[in-house]
Length: 388
Image (cartoon, rainbow, N blue to C red; front, side):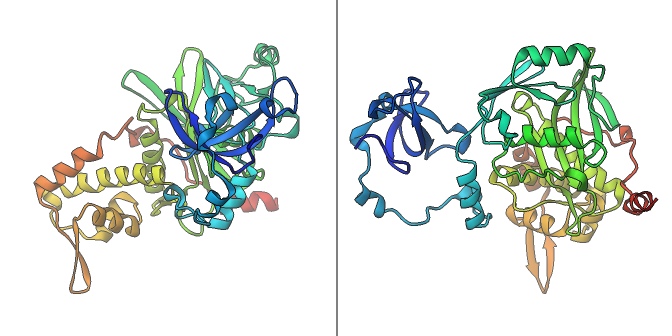
């Protein structure tokens, strides 16, 4: 029975004191470094919870009477249903989970915030033994020890991200600002942003070559400087029409309406470009919920206007820059779309619209388009500069 093998299933105590089924992901010698059976620690996945809650436990936390035998394991399906990642390629998903199965960095310090991490991130090898990293919140340089960060801060003279500030507005007593950062011009900052983001994103592909991306970093502004709240990235030239590749609100700033603001801002850029946009696929289940909420609020705000009683899918797309496929899927989800005589017909009674708008929730921190000072990226100009 002991030590438990990787892949074994057993009941294990959770933070609330209750026992839940877990699967052993990895095992290691305990703190004493003794390889006796009772000295092992086990990295486990709580099967009813998200992977970000995976953690190290000991035998003392487990009910060994519930451990499954090899025969029990064989009775399980070869492929278990994973609704959260249903749209992902199964082979790629298995490879990803094998490579990232154990969190390497357990916590980070960023400005005034200390945050427990959720997932593995491929930091350089010299950082693999660190349990905690210290980030400069302005440059995103990271360090193994607090003293190293403090030395850096004493020399640092930059109190905002690199790139261009393209938006600033005060709302709800807070000042929010966006910076546009070119991955080619500020490569180290953008790579460090990717390292940090991967600690909180399960299926973000880390691009060491960030040259092809623009990063839009959202900050809170106060007398001490610009404090990174979150960001989204987008390809400079997307053949598929994606207006967003990756999005993250840091845990310390979640549930404050900033995630909705990031999505809204990506569409304000699309409106300024005059291009219909859509987020890169596949979307996670939580990503789809967030986007569907935004699409619902934008579309129904137009449909509730009596002066726009007759609207086509194309009209809605031109007003919002939301892709027609996203409009159709959203209205179908709300049961507001019928297909008659080879065409879609929007069936939206005022009381039904109000009901769905209420259920969609608040728009979060709202974007004021008049405060956006921005010129869309010009690939042709970049190419001419490259040629010299």
